[in-house]
Length: 537
Image (tube, rainbow, N blue to C red; front, side, top):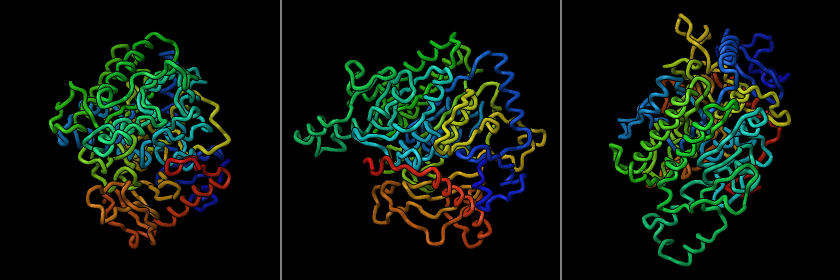
């Protein structure tokens, strides 16, 4: 029985502890405590039992991850037509499912993707920054969602962007996926040094250009079955300024074919589909070039990605698999402002590379026909860490690792909750709570912030350098230790502009206690810094 939350003084040790509307369930020493709400768990178990009797099999999972798409890009989040890039398929999913308004990723792509795959924060799995140009990742010692589902009888596929390292121990075909079709890195690794607009000093200098061309990082699309690595035949076309345009379309064809092939299968499946779009630099394919009302490359590619998702959804619908498939639609982080205007949008402060909400608060939509209440909107906290334990519980996985700390919590009850007559969800107070009590934000290897309910407190942050006027993004900022900290009420101040620290000191003991309890877990389960600044430590 874990007691670190109680020992910290954050929660009274009376067996009926409450934190902002939920009873605390401390169910394993190496697991993040979760909040329980009256009736939720029982209702969820009943729905799942009834579905299993009806279908006779475990649920399928489709995790669809966009790249660098901000909280404000989808129409259902205030973007769409306003941004000159309608997203009818994303919007339809939100209308028919659960739209999260407080879904949290990590500050950049690789840490987010590794967190989703491991259920662990970057400070634990070790991928603190994106590995670039052939650098190793840190998944070799990790247990991934795909590995756990594979053991539970799932057919697994990874499609598109991976970006968790190019070393053999970190690539998807060696981390639980039966087959991988995509690239190991991120698209600008393959294109920016070929583009005369961005790098004329490289393109027009044969010596430098050839040095990069011959550098030891994989520049190809990979199609590999489990266990295949660095062997003839797995490398497909080389990625350049021409072939990059069609990557997402090709990957969509593959995923649609896979979904259709599983129509009559008795085996459950897990499909992880990570798009190339909309990471800079965006090169829309011919049929989408200029199709957005905005006409900018990012917007054209966003329209393309919406279309691709619509194709996958249609395949599920046509093959009758919607009732047994849980879909999670999201993005890996906020806008990359260094590449503006070829970038996304957030209404919040900060951007990719920061722990301000502009960097880590992302769109998140769950859909499961007949299981997730349609038209539901919630500000309940959801962290990328929660994907692994939630999907594993739904799949009946019983052997989650016990030798490491799992930061994610099981959110089944929250996702499957139904509205009570009074408008709350099974009478919980307040209605917007999930099974997660707090989100802890880390900035590389420094504990940066925490959010509890509508409150968010900082002790470290990335601030813009006032001398940088051209690229005011998160990766251009500098780390700031906040002498007295900052506290924001995100309901009053979603842009995090008006700190209430002095007026709201009453909240600081709760933040201090929960953060201390969180940090205390590292005493038994030490942090791992596998990658820092792109280099192994």
